[in-house]
Amino acid sequence: MSEENANIEQAENGLLYKYNREMFYHFDREKGYTREIDYQISENQTIIKQSWDAAEQRLEGVRQRIIAGRLSPIAYYMEKALMEVPILAAYMEMSKWRIRWHLTPKGFKNLKPEILEKYASVFGIPVEEMKHPNF
Amino acid sequence: MVKLEFEHRQAGHCESGVTSNLLNYYNYKISEPMAFGIGAGLFFSYLPFMKMQHAPTTSFRVWPGMIFERATKMLGVKTMVHHFKDPKESMTKLNEVLEQGYPVGLQVGTFHLPFFPPEYRMHYNMHNMVVYGHDNGTYFISDTLMEKLVEISYDDLMRVRYAKGTFAPQGRMYYPVYVPKEIDIKPAIISGIRKTAYNMSGVPFPLVGAKGIRYLSRRMRKWEKNLGPEKASYYLGQVLRMEEEVGTAGAGFRFIYGAFLDEASLVLNQDWLKEMSIEMGENANKWREFSYYGSRNCKKRGKPDQSYDFLADMLLECADREEKIFKKLAKIK
Image (cartoon, rainbow over all chains, first blue to last red; front, side, top):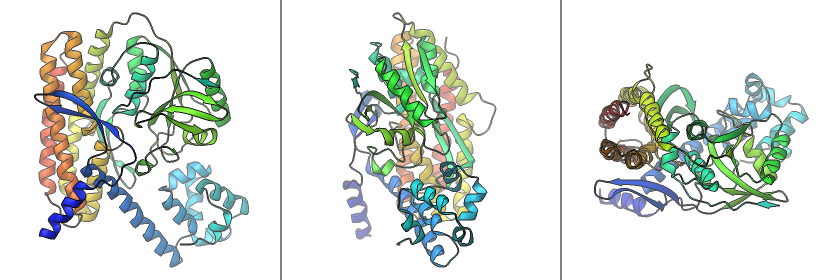
């Protein structure tokens, strides 16, 4: 129990994200409305971290499925860029069904070089890495 | 090379901050809460069928672009809004407008925004910022979320202006062209309050306004049973992220709105609005308490600290308070 308390205390004191301070409003019956510029409080930073943890977990799941031969490397880079099929389809200017086909190993194998290049430029990586992903 | 004398003021919310800063450039002093209130920015909707980052969308504000459009229209400010199909054309037009001496507001996606805090870089297309100059392919940006003024390159700017996904900005740019000398702010305030009161308590649709909060509360009770503890905490986290994350100034804009009511009571000389602002502030504190307990659930995914019923009850209380406040506000004269 004491260990758990210590963990919570540590998380409360140490802030995870200290890149930029934002403006917040506060209300108090005596003081009325006040503004202050500060980092996000640690409770809010926890929920931000939660979403990044979830994204990491999804990425790991996709990686396992690629190794098992059920998905193509495009799925990995799509997940890494936090994209979903509709967003990727919009960036690629293709139909969603075509993207879904490219996510399968079969569809990926017969991909034309120019389409592969377009994928690489959307993800901002070299074409070689698309073919031989290192993860 | 153009660099306008633009005063950078940090703000709680991007769009109302941009509106207030742009008007400030034309020597019309309007605070951020005022711009937010006149633009009728406060809202609530819970859309379980629309998924964002693999969880249902919760929104605490109106559609992007509405606050600027409404606030300027109500104040009699003339504006220009452009959309473009061709990215290059949009950049040429941006340069042209800057050279004429107008600072320009832009709607951008945050995923590729290089100066943005890394923890916020997700596919979120409703961010707003002001460009106030350019020099040889570098653009000078005033972003109300950031502490300092920032810069961005031509290619990056073009990329974020053409981000894809829900609410894609399509190069949307907007700027005031004419600000009248004498502005009567009183009717604008009253109309803004009426609009928000209708949005929050009068819309005959179950997913928006105070009804929407109740609906969310009903759904929340079933999350743990239907989705399992892991996913339930992720769904809860999504609600809290929309409430507290990027530029809401806390508690899903409830604090800003309270500050607006406080200011409005002085301008309109109506004391009962002051009481309303106090009630709003307490309601906002309740929302913050909700997010405090909620975040503890998110931290311990397996065994939640508080039951979802407890959190749902808290939401119900917020819904009751808000309905009461806005039913009263709807009668403003």
